[in-house]
Length: 497
Image (cartoon, rainbow, N blue to C red; front, top):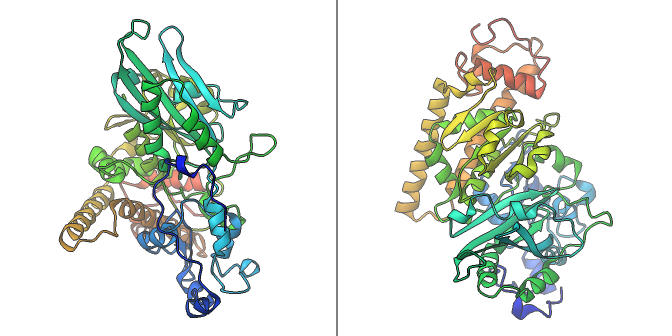
């Protein structure tokens, strides 16, 4: 058993966990056994926190993300360690526990759940003479240069509150901003602050949203009261490597996991009341299919929007989900499609070196920096100055058919939820599964064609991918070049033979 912190009365920053199950006696353990090795192998090895699984029926065979998320995350709050990861995969014989094969030892799970990778906590304020300033932080010796501009977006003075996801070096951050009117000439009638944290993964940050919102309001009313933040950091701090630079990734550390997760983005829990994917579909409409192609091609996508920033950060995450692929080995040689979330002018040098990313900004000056992006999204308008990409902005017949199926399935899901009280299925899972299945279908077909004695793409094979032989010809050529399918024979009219 892990000892509880002596600061327990102050721990008001987490969601209330489910009631702790009593430790079973040896007699009870005999009656309650985990799945047998045969059953475990039959169902595949599910990646907790991601919602996909591999199956002996074929690489990347998809199981229900709903059941995966429910069974893997109902009693956990973090991504498992590599040891836990392998322990949950009975196919990995060298890591299978001697007893209760396929089970994760209770003590390991408890210890890992107690360790949240929070590496910094900070307060940012707006000074009428100096602008954005880092007011306070822990640890005091950590390099947080520039975080004052990430945690308080340009134009935030126009909104009363907001939240912002961002990247700082190898870390992910979440900050909550608030703006309060004050009777002060020095502060020009308004006091603005942000309270934020840095972590090694964006998947856990949502747990502290309410705590950060409460703390920023506290800082506005009684500036300088850092005791709750100090207690929070003391309880949740993560031990960094000696160099302070290397970070733990959000994905499993085994080579097997790395091969899959290069094209899979860890689940990000959405706290927006209207839902993330639902809002994303309604906002972009058919343009989602354009963003899907550009994301799959690993293009640099920059989304512009005035504050509030929080909902736009969710759009960044949605764009990443469009490019998920769960077939082992696919995309290993292509640039990782990296979510940068909110960026500003201080990130220009960093973005200049990135080969593939998706980010959002409130700063209009980025529109003029055309070397930094391939695609610029202004509200619902998707634009590009790259001549080779302009034809991809037009929807094909297959795109419209896929969008029709997406909206039709979504309406059926909503009807099921309303009529049958289906509280398990969610739009988020449905959205992710829809594009994951589409992407797997494309790469499964390409792999099959590449393995033939005469690897030639025909009209039938293109249709088997769910693409339009004529309207998607250019997209397909870009895809072959991006993912290195050099062995495929492409004739002068590959899609019309």
